[in-house]
Image (tube, rainbow, N blue to C red):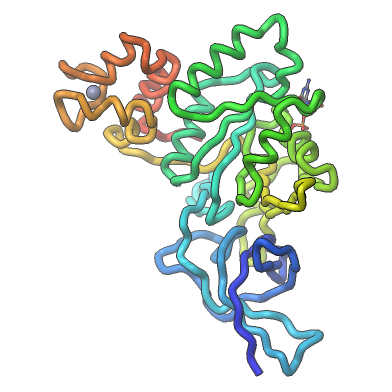
Length: 318
Ligand code: GDP
Ligand code: ZN
């Protein structure tokens, strides 16, 4: 007798996938049956972490039997890593994300706001709500307190939630854990900001992977994904799910047309409703509501300058 079911992909090892029916965590292996692939997808990996899949299980052969993935549900969203070499292949990092946590620190490594803004634009393009975590606040308490406030006001005024954390003192960790409860969250951050420490602070039993992932790892037929979903437990018995992105600076590369870029700066999108011209590049046009908002201070010069930078290289970056 055949048993059918629907489950979520949490990991891809060389020969098989590991699935579970969320919110549970009873992992079982599955293989791909035939040419299962979402229509139109050209990614190197047909099935990604976070994918919801249908599977068959042959009960007669239970014991040493393996489930077979028969189809993939349409993705609510996904984030991809584009290959930096000439093959131009895409690798899907994860699908069906509830949110992304972007971990930053003001120093060590020093923050580069245009880089953060590009990650935020990428999240908007992929339709993944972003939360900004400002980590290592134990280091800035006295000397750099004003910088912390300035950072927060830039991103809060743009409409993002900013959480101050320290994996050393524990500040903000329970707030972050609470925000990630019952959700699938992508964790991203430049190397050194404390992403691994953060994942361990959320749940000490987790062992986040560290180190660099090269394009070579993500190619070929027998690619093992380095992206994996972890479950963490909350003391009240709840749980949440983290997809770590080891070894990548941000994720994805977006190729946006000049006139599209402002659509992904939420505060600019809001203001642009009142621009006299449409489309408006918000640079030289008379009656531009975005430029007015910058003059009046409701759009910060930092974000506007990131926008101009992206406009210059037409949204491309790596
Ligand atoms: P990752 O590369 O983003 O995974 O960063 P790690 O978790 O490996 O941390 C990088 C360095 O930052 C390590 O030396 C950590 O001890 C340190 N670190 C992480 N979180 C904090 C924090 O909240 N405060 C301070 N002062 N140092 C931290
Ligand atoms: Zn305008």
